[in-house]
Each structure stands twice: as structure tokens, then as C-alpha cells.
Length: 118
Image 1: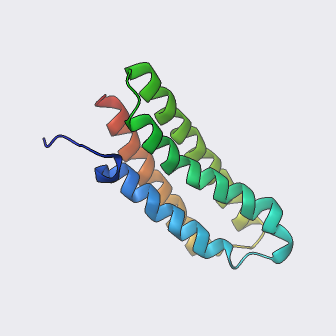
Image 2: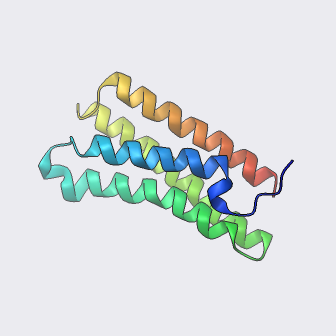
């Protein structure tokens, strides 16, 4: 197994970054009155996933690293809820919500494996 030297090399971070891009694209299509509500919330939560992975990567102690990785996991769960809400409000199609939710699940599995390897 190759030594990971930077957070950008982590598959979990790469997939999470892909999720960020997808969320930004789809939220551009949400109603304008959601700009400072749901759009803002889901964007902050999804960016928090990648930011916490990055921050945790360079923490010096295992408890510090795990703290930030756990924050990434909790932000991921928050994003999952916002996807459900957006679907229920008819801002997302069932197909798109399933696609995003599947990407969230993939990120979660990768992140969990990374955490377990620490």
C-alpha cells in the first residue's frame, strides 16, 4: 500500500470533491428564494466534508485527526438529509437524488475505510 503524502491523494477526498461539484451544479437550479436557505445550508455542509478531511490529514495526533474525520462524516450525513429534503420539495428528481445519495454512500464508505486505517 502506497503512503499517502497529501490529502488530495485520498480517494475519499477526491470522491467528496466530486460530490461538492455536483451539489454546486444542482443547487444552481433550485428556486432563487432558497439561495440563503437550503442552497446555503447544503453547500456549507458539502464543503465541510472535504475541508475537514484536508484539515484532519495534517493534524499531529490520532485523536485530532479522528475528530476532523468524524466531523466530515457528520457533515456527510447532513448532506444526505438535505438531498432527501430537496427531493421532497421537488427541487430534485428522484433519479438525481438517488445519484447524489449513492455518491454520498460511496464517500462514506471510503471515508470510513480511511478512518479505520488510522
